[in-house]
Length: 334
Ligand code: SF4
Image 1 (cartoon, rainbow, N blue to C red):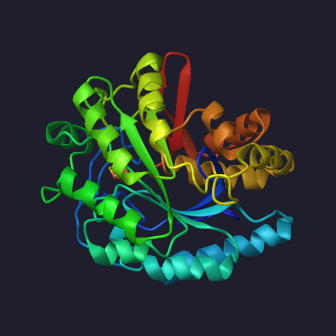
Image 2 (image 1 turned 135 degrees about the vertical axis):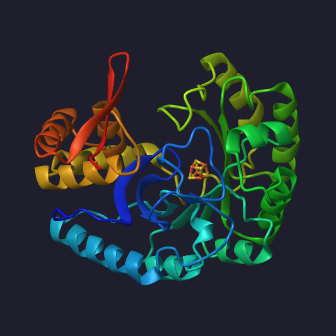
């Protein structure tokens, strides 16, 4: 492994919702309770709702400690957030509470966020663990059972109505911020029926934020395509205003994002080639990306990304994975 390359720690990358976010992968491979048609994390290894220490807390936290030492050596500031997510569903890792506590101890003052597909949120024990985080970002793509089945292709035990009730219960029980995400797939979950149900749900939930997105990169299935800009704009105009306004002005995760982006660009001006290669490798290990996407996600100079990518390809560490028109996607080798 090159200096700086990590297995479970990746980034920081720029996140629209969280600012400069350091990712922790709690699964090590794509182990998930769903098999979403739009997933970018590669082929599914295991579809399960069984909780286990898939990656033990010590393995993640040892890497996080090492990352923090390297960060100090480079003189870089702390990230804006530590985000539990990665290749699969993080709540499946039964060591999640220890990882949250450990991340707080290693990076004091840095908010902890959890990206979740919400599938285990009907379980009160999982909700109690998620309440240890500062922010929870649940996904809920459809409340129409047939659409939920087609887009998310979850474990047979999952039920979208029960998941919705789990998210609502979490909002009542916890002080954590809740940022809901809805991802639209053209012709599948962009129906008026789903929009009406999600509007009713968001009115009850009053999340701190609602993000409606669509595919920006190739997903698992070729038929999963983005919705057109007009549809996306319509959904956003219907759902975004249903977020609770109270508290958004207070400093917290994602607050002051423009400021964060400016700081990030300054830091990345000084990114070394070794660091760029390590970050690109870690990012490509999670999903194929174009040079432009890497540059945006890593806040790195496009010329530096181009040189680092060329070097990784020449060294056999990255390969071209596919082309979409003029767009060339790269992935790690093997
Ligand atoms: S929940 Fe996330 S990790 Fe799991 S299949 Fe869907 S997109 Fe992929």
